[in-house]
Length: 112
Image (cartoon, helix red, strand yellow):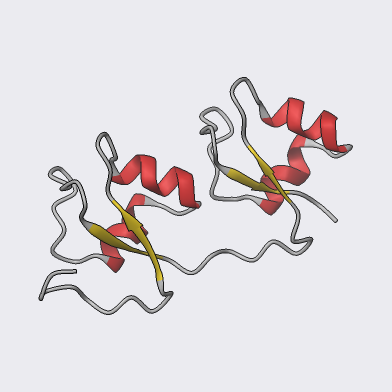
């Protein structure tokens, strides 16, 4: 972490890897680009550096504590069918996700 690193209240960090963008990171951790920019003032979103450490927001609580990790080919509909719930309920529990752009490895909160 550089000398100009702002304290990170959540204690959660992301180490930038090749190909990462703020949009990709936001999708993976369930937040917005605007929130990442707010937590990381001075970071150039158009010039992330490999190895750079970004502060992440506190994790959104999942009431059930049960998650589905998105695999290739998963859709909200297929996840809902596999877990006996509805797309609407998944969206209610995961307001940060883009249902048309799920990311492999992304965690989706499931109902209890």
